[in-house]
Each structure stands twice: as C-alpha cells, then as structure tokens.
Amino acid sequence: MTFHVVDLIRTKRDGGRLPDAAVDWLISSYTAGAVPDEQMASYLMAVVWRGMRPAELSRWTAAMVASGERLDLSGLGRPTVDKHSTGGVGDKVSLVLVPLVVACGAAVPQLAGRGLGHTGGTLDKMAAIPGWRASLAPERMRSVLTDVGGVIAAAGAGLAPADRKLYALRDVTGTVESIPLIASSIMSKKIAEGTSALVLDVKVGSGAFMTAQAPARELAETMVALGDVAGVRTEALLTGMDTPLGRTAGNALEVDEAVAALRGGGPADLVEVTVALARRMLTLAGLAGGPDPADVLAAGRAHDVWQRMVTAQGGDPDAPLPVAPHVETLPAPATGFLRRLDARAVGLVAWRLGAGRARQDDEVSAVAGVRWFAGLGERVVAGAPLLELHTDDPARLATARAALADAVEIADTPPSVQRLVLDHVHL
Ligand code: URA
Image 1 (tube, rainbow, N blue to C red):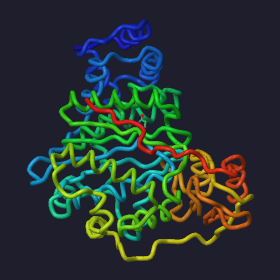
Image 2 (image 1 turned 135 degrees about the vertical axis):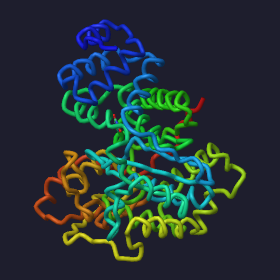
Image 3 (image 1 turned 90 degrees about the horizontal axis):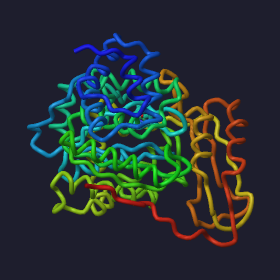
C-alpha cells in the first residue's frame, strides 16, 4: 500500500494516530530513501509535540526492528540477558557487569554504539585496551557467546538501519528530546540484538539525559512496555547521576577502574550500581537462585571472564593501558567534606580534554580524562590533590579547567546520604 507523506504529517500534526500499515510504510520507505529527510523531519517534529499512543509506538518500534536483521540467539545453552544505560559520566558499569553476569551463569550479548557528547561510550572505553576490536561478525559473536558467554561489540550496519538514519536526522533537527522517539530508538536496537531479557539503567541527574525523576520514569515505563510487547522481558532501574560514578571519567582511566572492581576492589558506588543491575538481570534470566553477584564480584571471579572476553576480541588484557603525557593536579580549595561534584561539569571536562566526540566520526583519545581523589561526603584537606586532568594536548587544559568553575562544593558538614538506586520499574 502507498500513502501520501503529507497526509501522514497532517494527521500527526493534528494529534491523530497513523494506521499500522502507514507506520510500516513510512519507516520502510524512509529507510529505503523513498521518503526524503525534510518530510521525515517534519513528521518527527509533529511526534515531538503530539507524542505517540502505546500501540502506535509499539508498531513504530517493530517497523524499526523489521528494517534490518533480528539476531537469533536461541540454542546457546544458557539464557541471554543484556543491560542498556541511557548514559552517564564515569559510567563504566558494563565493563564490570557483563563479565559478572556471565560468571553467574547467563550469556550477555551487548551490542552498542559509540558515545556522543559528554557521556562516554562503552565501545570507546573498551577500545583503550591494546589490540581490542569492536566489530564481530554475527557468526563469530555466536561462537564467542557459546565459548566465553559475553561480548561487548559494535552493532553492525544491518541492525535497525532505520534507527541509524532517524537518529542522524533527529540530531540535526532538534527532535532528539522526545520520549517515544528515544524509547523506540533504544528498544529497536536491543530487540534486534536478540536478547531474551533486558535491564535498563535509566540515569537521572545533572550528568544524564534526564535531569528529573518524573520524565526518567516515564521513559523507563515506555521502554519496559515496548520490551514486553516485543517478547523481551524488560525492567528498569532509575539510578542517580548528579555525581559521576566511581573516581574516573575517560576511556583508559575507566578501564583501569573497572578492572580494579573485577578483581574484587573498586569504588563502592560503582560496585553498588553494578550489583543492583546484576541481581535484576539474573532474576529476569531465571538464575536468581544462584550465587549472589556481590559475592562473585568480591571474590574476583568475574575477572577471569573479563580476560577471556578481551582476548576473544583481539585484546591483550595484561598489556599496560596507555597513559596521558600531560597530567595536571588541582588541589582542594578548602578543608571540609565534599558536598558536591557535579557530574555534568566533570563530563564536560573529560570531553574537552579529548575523551568524547562531538560528531559520530570524530576520533577520541584513549588517555584523556579526569580522576578525582574523594567521593561525595569524604573529607578533603585544603591544598591536597582533589582532581587530576589527563590529556594528550596541553592546549586543552585551560578550557577544561574553566568547566570546573562551579563544579565542586566543600562544606563543614557532610551531605545527607544519597541513594543511588532511586526506583525500580517493571510490569
Ligand atoms: N540513545 C539512543 O540510542 N537513541 C536516542 O534517541 C537517545 C539515546
């Protein structure tokens, strides 16, 4: 069936709902290049204002999945489960979580894109490991999942190609910020990846996409419902992102910290979020009766899986990580308790030092980033090192430092204890 795009735009503009056949046609014609960008941009802007009803959004997401291949991961001999984070500063959770959940008995097929903006991408962090390659052909991915149990790899061009085109268009037309468009974009890729279950880590706070809990919960509920309709058991945790996670932001720095957690150490906030997500993943995978992931992590049992995962993708897990040629230490301006370390500012600093990209095809630095020596509520002493800026290019230090102007607050009393896991969204 053929439709007139202008009619579809008018219907959405006026608050109507497209019939299923029109949704399918619009997505497939746009992916094939038969509907031009200007018409799709107009349609997307109408969605920003008018939204999508639940059934329409499920159909839209299904059409995005159907625009490419949907991997079949049945027959691996263990249940599949994945995690997706909406993105935060210092968010190296996947590097610890994937091997941990594998060590507890599940298979984790994590396919991801590269990071954009002030939150770093998991693939960029992994790429700091000497020799490691992000791309895996589907047959190789299956064999690594069978032998090792976990992969973190780049999503191939055949996975939800409609999203690739739509995301690029949304990026340049002011239509990224729409809950149905974000939810369908994320879920189309995760459904196409072939996982049977999925836990979403929806970050909330200054360093996240969503700064307030109400829209974050709405996004989580929308994605959980989309997963359910597509036959993927899906839940979400809302986790705090006013403060960056762990003690580092930047690719190689974060790998180093993730490895410390895999050896049974690592910062407490990183461990807390990782274990909370692992417990939900194992429950959805039907493995809740097994060992507690907190114990598995503390015993260093996920580290062996990590080494095998890195090796399977060409990396050398024992090779030293690259280090920055220029490191500047910033002292604490006062004595007291660290009351605030703003996640957005820290993300921006890491990005300005070279750790992130502004455009999809920009190169990122493996060594650039930020380390902080105190966590929230910890005591700091005036003049002692508080932050460290790492970069390949000293010319970047001044603009990076400027982003820290109001990022740190030191007070006479510690802040009240802040919960990291804020909410649990499930059917
Ligand atoms: N991440 C995605 O994959 N898509 C969006 O629309 C936003 C964040």
